[in-house]
Structures are given as C-alpha cells and as structure tokens.
Length: 485
Ligand SMILES: Nc1ncnc2c1ncn2[C@@H]1O[C@H](COP(=O)(O)OP(=O)(O)OP(=O)(O)O)[C@@H](O)[C@H]1O
Ligand SMILES: [Mg+2]
Image 1 (cartoon, protein in one colour):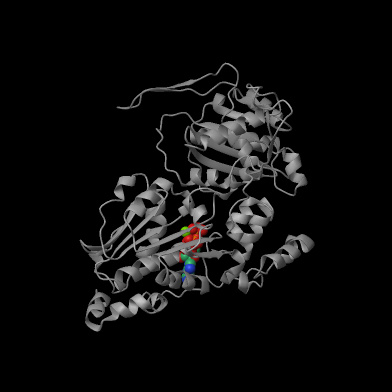
Image 2: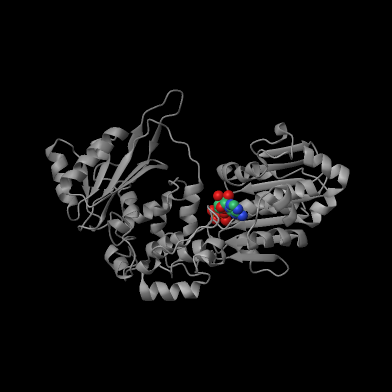
C-alpha cells in the first residue's frame, strides 16, 4: 500500500520500470544472483525471453519478482502466469509471488490472494491453469505480461491462445524436458532473448569450486566420488548444489539425458535411446488424478538379488502410485515381515501382492505361502503374453508402464527418473527388449529396481483377466479392463 502510494506521489513508477534489479533488491528486498539479474534485464529490454536451466536455478523465484516489477512499474497492467498443472501454478510460482511481498508494505493485505493480486479490476496479476485454453481470453491492457513456468510441459494450443492475447512481453521458463513443442522451438528461433543456465554457473557450485562441467567431468572420471567429500558449499539455500550434481552423476551418469536436462540445462538428445523419456516421467509426476478409495491396490516387490541390492516396494492404486519403500541389506525373513506389515497398513489382498521370484524372491514367496498368504510370484524373465511384440515379460510390463504414464500419477520422487536410464532395442523378430540390470551395472548405473517394482504392479497371474470395482456410494461401477498375463 505504502509503496503503491509512493509510486503515485514520487513518480517512482517510471524508475521502477527502467530498473527491475533495483526494484527487486530495494523494494522487495530480494537479492539476486547474476543470471537472475540477467533474466530481469532481458525482460526489460526484449519482448520475448526464454530461459532454460538446470533444476533449482532460481527461475521461478525470479519470475515471481518479475510479476511485481511489471505490476508496480506499469499502472493498469495485467500479468498472467501459467504452468502445465493447477498445482504448479498454485504451489510453485504463486508461492514465490506471495512470499516475495509477505510482511512488506506493498499491497493492501486483502489484495493478495492465492493466485491473484488485485490492485483494481483493471490492474492485476492472475494465475491460470492450462486445462482450459478458453480461459486465455478477454484480457486487455496496454501492458500485458505473460509468464509461462515449466514451459516444456505446456501444449502448443495454450501458446496459440496466449499469442491471441497479443502480450507486450512474454517470459518462458523451464527445464528443457523435451525436444518438441513451442519451448524447444523458441531456442532455435532468431530474435528471441535466450538464457541458458547450467548448474556450473550457479552460486553454490561456484562456491564449491566447480564452475565448469569440463573440470567436473575430468575429476569425476579420474577420481570418482570420494574426491568430492566435504567439497559442497552452500551460499544460497534452495539452489542446486554440488551434492545434487553428484547425485545425478551417480544415478544416471554424466552422459545421460537426465544429467543433460537437470544439471546442464540442455535438451535431451534428439535420438532417444531411452525407453521412457524424462518428459513422460515428469508429466506423470505433475499430474493430479482422482482415485476412489475402494479401488484395489497392487503391491509390486522387487526383491534384492545380491547382498548389496535394494528391495523396493511400490503400491499403486489404478492411476496413482501411492507409496514407495526401499529396504537395503535385508534377509528373506525380514523382507517377508515388511510385506505383511505394509500389506496390512495398506489393506492389500494377498493376490494383489506381486513379487519378483528371481533369486531370493522365490524364498519370500514360499515363506508367505506357508503362512497362508497366497501371494503371486512373478518371473519377469519368462516369455511375454504378447510374444509378437515383447521379448519377455519384463519388456511387456515396461510397455504397460509406458502406456500408464500417459494418464497416471507418480509420486514426486526422483527415483522414478531411473526409468529413463533404461535403453531398448528390438530383437531380430521385432520384439521389444529392455536393457538388463546387468548391462546397466556394466555402464556404472544403479539397477532400476523402482521401475521393476512398478512393472510388477501391472503383472497379472493367469486367470485374472479383469477386476470388478464395486459401485461406490453414489458413484458409477466400472470394469477395469486390465489384460491378463
Ligand atoms: N536469489 C535468491 N535468494 C534466495 N533464495 C533463492 C534465490 N533464488 C532462488 N532461491 C530459492 O532457491 C530455490 C529454487 O529456486 P526456484 O524454485 O526459483 O528454481 P527453479 O529454477 O524454478 O527450479 P525448478 O527447476 O525446480 O523449476 C527456491 O526455494 C527459491 O526460493
Ligand atoms: Mg521453477
């Protein structure tokens, strides 16, 4: 409020308009690191600015400051922000927008709402979700700024609707998750201001003395992880750190698409080698699906095969993965105990517990059966049901995961990105074959146990063709036509 008055009285509006960095630092009291400043200055100087970066580079933080800068620098302005899902709009960018002005005498308290700042009915900022393109209509202002967060995930239809508004300025920010779509194309176009931020440009990595990828790569390949102990320095909490980079290097390899996208801010390779893409996993993590409490839950258990491996439990209720558990260094009896405990907690029927029987998994299944639990042992090395298309059951289950990712919701848990490590090929008979755990180990990558455990939740023992979900209170009964294996 006070600032708004000052803007009117002291003609600070024009000063603000010309000085976004000053505005962020002096009015919002938000200090910025170099690339964050560059984003704001580019936005002042150009009509269209696109920023792609590693994870946690400060894009949303900066875009939030840009919202206030535009509003307070232009009387009668409108800012529209959007992102692929409603949750991303509310909980990512708008959380930063609200926090940037919390406890500061800028707007009157009643004008700052969850996804709106309302100075007047012709002067406001508003968060829109992208599920309804027709929302992007009817906004008229001499000063219209549109900000698209997580722009890789936004469909071209929405961009067309945004173009229809003829904004004065547009800011696109995001991770470079896929090679297609408007966000990817913008980086091939002339005349648009582009900013790329690698983790090695960011303050925490610079403070840790790893300010370029080549240097990191050399040390990583020569010295390995031990060298990096105690090297992590944090100067701005929340931004990507050297430890994060190491985690990505270890889990996915420095040549992987995940490393390219999430550490270097690059697009994935054009020729996908991976069976499942980062974009597919990311979309499933961002999605919000509705499930009914009475729908059945499946538990897939990928049992450790050798002493040092992990046992992974995944619980999926139709379109939603509800829970992931990892246990390390456990013996058969302990794993059996966990299965019973989790099945009880989650109310899962024995036949919906699907356990990998290669290695000690077989013992786990026997032990549970002895105790009267008629669980299902699944051998993913056996032939697929659909032998024409899949080399074995593991590939077939992988195919089901890939289909399910189009509509399902994953937990927001980085472990699911391990699926993107798995390469694929076709056999001489044209069947899909997935890279084996052993081959992945040879490439220095961890075995994709979370992916395999999720795959098991799609395995159906012979005879179980479909499940009837009883009618819910007031709801509609339905068949879930899952194909039997
Ligand atoms: N200059 C800064 N000062 C203090 N905190 C900051 C600054 N820049 C970013 N942060 C904090 O760092 C964290 C990561 O920033 P932000 O979410 O903006 O990154 P991002 O690039 O949008 O990440 P993602 O890739 O996940 O979208 C947030 O908690 C944010 O508040
Ligand atoms: Mg962000």
